[in-house]
Image 1 (cartoon, rainbow, N blue to C red):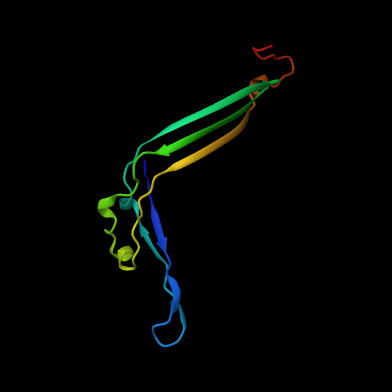
Image 2: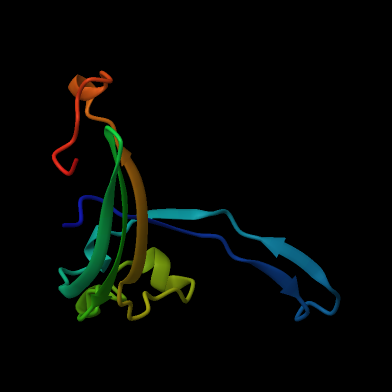
Length: 120
């Protein structure tokens, strides 16, 4: 769920049309971009493992998210006059992510040395 989005564009370059070489940099444009994005869907798969190491648990997992739809709102691609006036239009985007997580779980009430885990 998209809560908020902003987009900033700064244009700079070299002007050769005036007969010389002049560097220019326009002021940065910052606009609200929430209407440039649309709802999307995807699939996710993952695998993980945990190991009890004394009274703590060590966790390692990995997952992959494959975006199955375009997150760009195609109808609003040229809807912002300030962005389209400088030649900026949102490209088609799919979200594809790899996530690797590692963790250590410390059960606070079982940190005493007389507690034994269930696997012992």
